[in-house]
Length: 266
Image 1 (cartoon, rainbow, N blue to C red):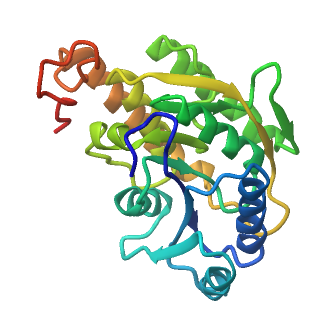
Image 2: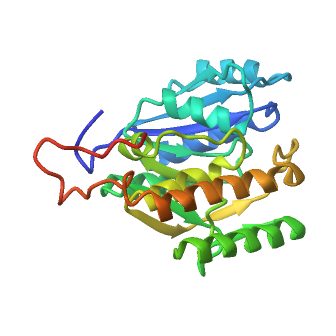
């Protein structure tokens, strides 16, 4: 791994549970986009999360065709949060980018994340709800819940970011290390990671992105099951912000004493 801001190794982490119909197209599309942009320093790490269909067989076939693709199997307990955490424990790069297996995230935007990270950005957060963003076929009920949840988070944390619940984000390795311990078991991890990064003082850049609803398979997000879990992790991070007196907030690079790195987040 390189320390140079403009010379990074980029890890795309894809959690996958029963995605045999989509995982091949997702990986191929990402590989082709990186090849088109002449970017060679990257990997695609698929975390197979207890798939019971042909997902693992498809992944094995992909590895034979695309040398940048490899995978690990997530051991129990299973679930989206655990799968992403497995990827964050395993990735090899300087930057980790969490991408959905259904190709709802644009490969062109993944490359934009790469380029922003190469300038030294510690976090890159995409938003589906900026002037230049594009959203295709978002279910109306989910869209209403999404906007209400993100409005609540914006007000509570006094942040300018309006799409915290979106899973598609990227973080430099030192950010992943600095926001430990990660607690979420499920999709509430999508808000835990960015909120901890913001509260603990890491720099982030917000860019418009595009999003397209999946064309096959079944969404793994169960709204009825997730409400209390989202609220728990939001309030957990909010209490850290209000009561920890900055114990877990990193010291800025400009203020770091000699020989002192990021503060431990334990």
